[in-house]
Length: 447
Image (tube, rainbow, N blue to C red; front, side, top):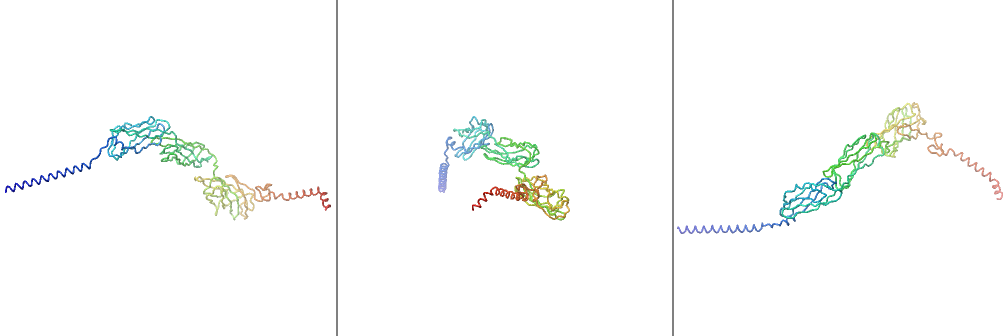
């Protein structure tokens, strides 16, 4: 019995030893395999640095003014498999100064697959030109990265001028001018604020803002100007180049006078007809000015009294060199003259009004005392200024024309001399025949 117990114990111990030995062998093999598959090759510092490159450079502002501050952002990208330590950033150029060199005095690690941006605060201390400062950053255990950066310095300013300035501004009348801003620089400018400094004139709007203006581009900014006297209005233009504020001034000279481009209404082809206790007036209104007249309305004013059905007559828009017919009805105790008011607006909404006084004393067939007994009508041409009385000779009136029929009727032109001319011709022929009578008689005798 004891022998069997001992034998069982020995066999059990042997099984345990064999199992432990097998487990150790398996673990060792697994460890060896894992070590074999997880081993990573370590690069030398120089090879690791070679995997880092400058991936982008951004300048703000894109183009510097002389002695102006700005930033240069340099981005490094690590495309390798291990981290690289960097320190000692510098920018080498006597014309471009690095102002925050101490900011990057500590060591910074750039991991594999990552990027890092150095923002350099610089100032341009030179005159106009293109410069190439050398960006350098050293690694802690290898060489350094060196990269040239192009920096342009340009003192050329933005330009501002006015377009569509009228020769004369009408007092208390709104006119539109366009301020053109041109950016001749190679870099964009931003936050442009235009502020007119009004004195002797009202300018609308009081300011205009433009977010940015690209290099080599321009923009037109309209302003409405209502002057009260001769003056000069400065338009101050401030803008930013990067974070640097600059400004310039554009001067708008204002000379007041008569608006040469204004609409000029002219009334002609007038015909007046008696209608009982009132009168019917018809004619044409022509726009002899340069600008279009909008919302044009005609009516008679005191001492005449406008009555229906045509107390007012709306023309609407009347283009330059165009005309439109109109009709008015009115009552009056004296038809020697009729004042007709013409009202209109221009393209900017300014309101204008003028009174044309039509002289009707030469018209026949009308009761000039206003009794309304006559029902005849006569047409005539009328021209005049905006406030003066317009007169014209009635068609067919004696003495209304010149010798050559210019400005008058047929009866007053060349045709009125036809009998005299015919008589003169007959007399000349008679004289010729009398002087040549012997020669003519001799000719007849020979035949």
